[in-house]
Amino acid sequence: MTNVLKRTGIAIGLPVVLVVVWWFASAGSTDFYFPPLKNIVEVFPQTWFGPRLADDVLPSLARLAVGYAAALVLGVGLGMLIGSSRTLRATVEPLLEFLRAVPPPVLVPILVLIAGIGNTMKILVIISGCVWPILLNTVEGVRAVDEVLADTCRTYRIRGRLRWWHLVLRSASPQIVTGARQALSIGIILMVISEMFAASSGLGYTVIQFKDGFQIPQMWSGVILLGLLGVLLAVLFRLVENRVLDWYHGSRAAQKER
Image (tube, rainbow, N blue to C red; front, side, top):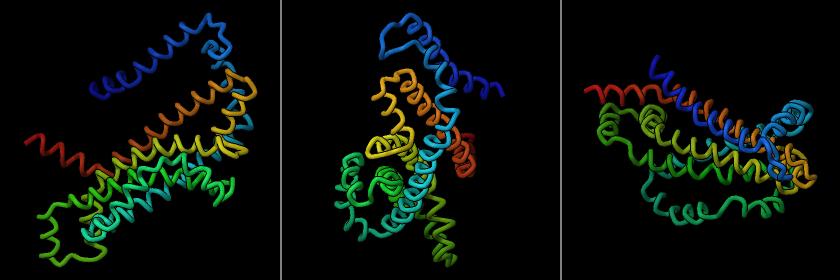
């Protein structure tokens, strides 16, 4: 219990200190583009807890959820397939390296031409960035399957779906989760970027509208909201990770005690 409280205090302490410093450092600011934090906090509720919650915040989160889920399914599926075949991996590796090197924001104009300016384009932008850390980590996780466990499966004739589920996917799951964690932060960034191009709703679109309308406190409130959403999603991901990898953390703890 003491360790939990200590870790919680450390995690919360630095953000609190930074907010306090920002509050007092900006208190007397007369700079139009860097208003006092007090002004930003005052406009925050009326800006985001009204119609914009349903018109901008929720659609952005929905697009992020769909794009992230699609990237997760695609990345894990292809990663397990590629990682399990040395020939296939050698064949597609140059193509994967080329595609991974292309920055997803560069694809936005191309995707606009292909998919238009609706939700499909924005979801494809999110997928184009999120899929790579998941795919590459899955490939490495599948390649690192314990040979002893693989031989045990062959000895007991555990094949097909049972082998994939209980050996390959389970063994690769720590690295899959690592890739999924990296993809989540990339997805948030691409969600905002995709909404800055030819959009009519979303957090990125609204922040740009505030900037163009010289509503600077509202613009900063949007930046803060994105940060808070990032923290919330990271906490939720950590809870899911602890549930999915409970066996893995327990195994590592047991090894340390030996």
